[in-house]
Structure formats: structure tokens, C-alpha cells
Amino acid sequence: MSTIEPSGTFVLGDRPVKRLGYGAMQLAGPGVFGPPKDRNAALAVLREAVAAGTNHIDTSDFYGPHVTNRIIREALHPYPDDLVIVTKVGARRGEDASWIPAFSADALTQAVHDNLGNLGLDVLDVVNLRAMFDVHGPAEGSLEAPLATLAELQRKGLIRHIGLSNVTPTQIADARKMVEVVCVQNQYNLAHRADDALIDDLARDGLAYVPFFPLGGFSPLQSSILSDVAAQLGATPMQVALAWLFHRAPNILLIPGTSSIAHLHDNLAAADIALPDEALVALDRISASLRPE
Image 1 (tube, rainbow, N blue to C red):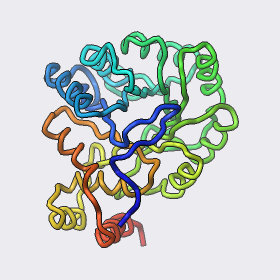
Image 2 (image 1 turned 135 degrees about the vertical axis):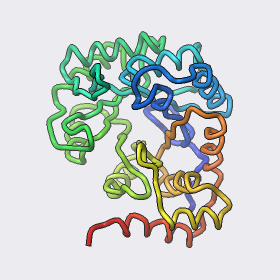
Image 3 (image 1 turned 60 degrees about the vertical axis):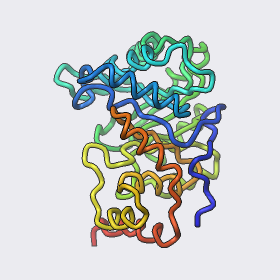
Image 4 (image 1 turned 90 degrees about the horizontal axis):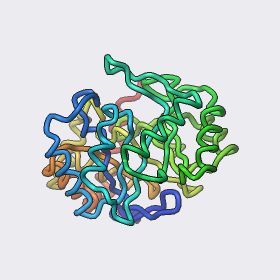
């Protein structure tokens, strides 16, 4: 049995947070664009998450845009002392809901001020720079100029900590020569494990790794192996997928999102699922089965 404690905490920046957080992306409308179908339900799920002990919320002002942050403020402000809100900059939304890089100093500065205003904060706990050289995944490109802008905003007291999102190991190494990086947020789940080595390297350095699309994102995880393990454990496949991430490494912080209180509680219950060794071995076969011959 793994010795990692899924329901434990990990330091994000300089604040301990529970390893199961909440991602606000799904509080916006379809395609993360426009308002939610039910604003009252969005407010309720945020309040329930915090009431249940969640103290790490991931968001961005380009969700909507300007939708999720305003909902977070309406639901939770004034914020609990232990709540850490992490946001992202580096993109903007087109009128057609497209995702557009926004890396200039002016765009990043405006994004930070928009996040502050819409969240009702004087300083942002953590700001992740989202690399947009390829919208669909990490791609090489220099982050020197945008990181210099964020570092200046940090010196001015508008940002406490800086993280990275959608980045390569080379970009992370280069960034850490410029600023203190406290977390990396990349796509990672049972089926998408390109960052295996990176996660272990970050764990050795005490840095948080926050997988986005932990349940597959817009294409939910589908696997007969996952379904079989879930049935044996009396859990749902998505709960087992989250539990596997908890067991994968102690520095993994999860931010599954939902607009449903019932689904929220399903996600929270994943922190208490123990995976026996035979289940871990079986689940490891999922990514192996998807590798090209």
C-alpha cells in the first residue's frame, strides 16, 4: 500500500493547502465562455466546497471571461483566512470563444489588475503564467519577457508567488533561473502521463504539481481497466482516477471542477479511497496500453 496520504496537505507557495482543491473553470458557460446556466447553483457549489474544508481554488479571469472570478467573489468574499486562490494569465478570449495568447507587458499587467478587481483582492496568492505557444499542449518558446513582467508586479506587491502552466521542462528550468516558481500546472491523468519524470523532479524540490484535466477534460477518461478497478473497490471510475493521482506523488494537488454539489461530494470522497498495490499495478497499465507500438 502506498505511504502517501491522499487527504494530507502540501505547501503551495508559503501556505499549506489540502491536496484536494477545486477548479472553477466549469462555473462558466459551455466551452468556458459566457455565464453559467444556473448562477445560484454555481454560488452554492463554491460555498459547499469551502464549507467542506476546501482551501485551494484554481481560477482565471479568462474563464468566461470575467465570469468565474466574479462568482467566486460573490460566493465567498470576505475570504476565509486559510483560502488560497490561484489564477492564470497569458491568454484572452476572442468574441468567438477562441483562446488567444496575451503575453505583452500591457496585457499581463491588465490581466493581473482584472483578477485583483474581479476577485476583490489587494494581492494575488499565486499567478500562473500560461504558455500559449501551442493552445493544445506545451511547446518550446521563451518565457523571459512575460516572466520579467510578472516579477515586476511581484516586486510591486500585487503577486505573492509565481507558477507556470502548459510548459516544458526546459521552460521550467529557465524560469527558475529568473524567479522562484512555486507550482507547475500541466495536463496529466491516468491516460496522459508525459510528465511522469517532471513530477518526480518537482517532488524532490518540494514544488507542487497541479494536473489540469485530471479526469480527461473535454474527453472524459474511458477504460475497461478503470471501470473494473472501480467496481472492485465500490467506487466510481472518476473517484478511482482521482485517487490514483493522489497516490502517484505527494506533491500532486488536485483541482477537479464541477457545477454540481453531488458531484463535488463524489470528488471529495476520492481523498479517502485507498488503492491496494494490485489496483495500482492495474491502473498503470492504462497509459501503457495507449502507447504506440
